[in-house]
Amino acid sequence: MYRYKTSGVCSSQIDFDIVDHKITHVTFHGGCNGNTQGISLLVEGMDVDDAISRLKGVRCGGKGTSCPDQLARALEQAAKQ
Figure 1 (cartoon, rainbow, N blue to C red):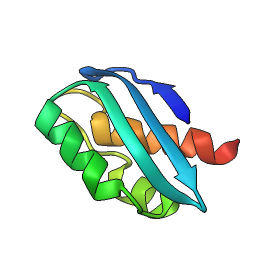
Figure 2 (cartoon, rainbow, N blue to C red):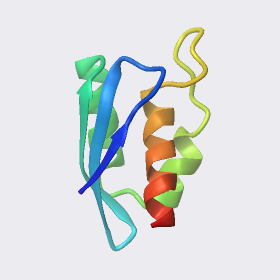
Figure 3 (cartoon, helix red, strand yellow):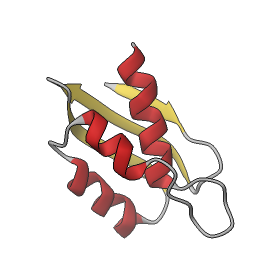
């Protein structure tokens, strides 16, 4: 299980697993419940690199990041390990 402390967004942490380069068990702690549940369900089973390319750079309002962008950053970090 990977745990990623978020920055600049409403959620405080993202937990997830990677099995055979596919994303599983994504859980956001905090944030907009409906949106984070939706993101989790959409990326479940997705290839790590595909998710990163789709989510990286998504912005929320005037913030320089978003929950999807934070997930992309977490996946990038996990992929390096």
